[in-house]
Length: 230
Image (cartoon, rainbow, N blue to C red; front, side, top):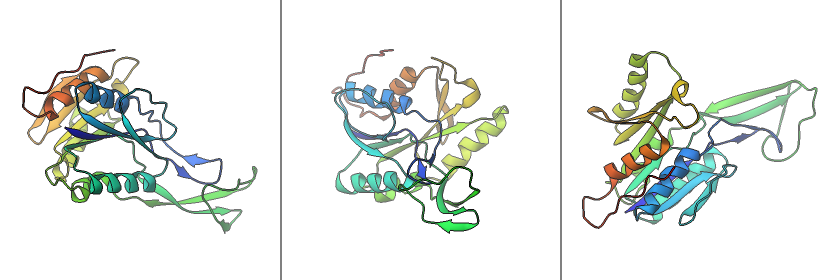
């Protein structure tokens, strides 16, 4: 079984020292990638350049920006046949379209530094949804796609509606849902959803990784269950 796992968060440069980013560390994606590798899968971990991810036995590629991640996934999916993509990366909904300093537009990107004390206006442009294109890019049109939905909502009904909206787009086979308010230390509660609704509930990253392995692995005797290491 060949599996791509994406992990960590994209960052969009404003200048050579400043980026817009998010809080994703890539830790959960790293656990999932290692679990699949321990179970005998061929794993490519596509992770954020700044994520502190360790672990032997993994093929790797890195990204910084939304465009980097999109390019990497398009390339890998079009050059090899993959059985599953576990798309955990926290992808920016917006990229920097333009930057004005004291009312004048400047070239923005990964060079230079805007002086402190200046008025800065940043215009953002929406990014496309990478998860909606994964199957169309893939050599294997039957590739299984796992998406992730992180909410920060108290109402369980509203949470379920957000997960259902992702599933209803028809581009994912499974969706893993977490709510930020419930994640604390070693506790990492999650629900795995299919089109029929929630099918598995887990409480730690390791339990989640093992549950995904069990759901995605081929139904043969050749596959071993990885150890549930902390």
